[in-house]
Image 1 (cartoon, rainbow, N blue to C red):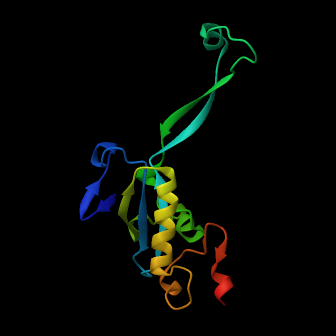
Image 2 (image 1 turned 90 degrees about the vertical axis):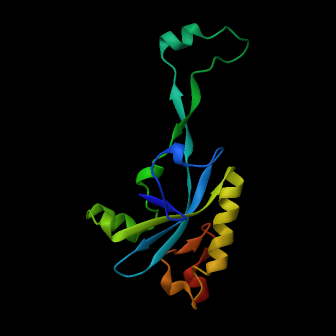
Image 3 (image 1 turned 180 degrees about the horizontal axis):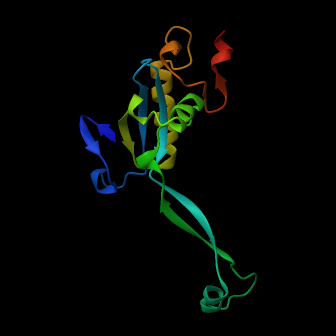
Length: 149
């Protein structure tokens, strides 16, 4: 279950209108360590068209389409984070050891990345002074915890 300002978020209907995604903090209760990340509500999937679907397409000049992009709901309801430690705990069925809190909703993909970075810098998730409280190992794959050692 996701929490936002102490309110449970269970379905898309619980989200504000035009939400593209959100910034979240997952907390491992036994250690108190946290992970800050972003999650999109939808993602694009490429679907190959079958013979029947291809036959129904209007004839156009040039190359014929063989696939279409479809927007699908992501796995946001069951997502906890991409950190290896979190994934390992979930494999061992330790879901009850985590809390998940949404800290901000956003309306575009670009805002999703911006606000993730903003909060990661704000909380100093990889800095030596505050980084021990966080599970994040890097920011955007460019700034690493080891860069501060």
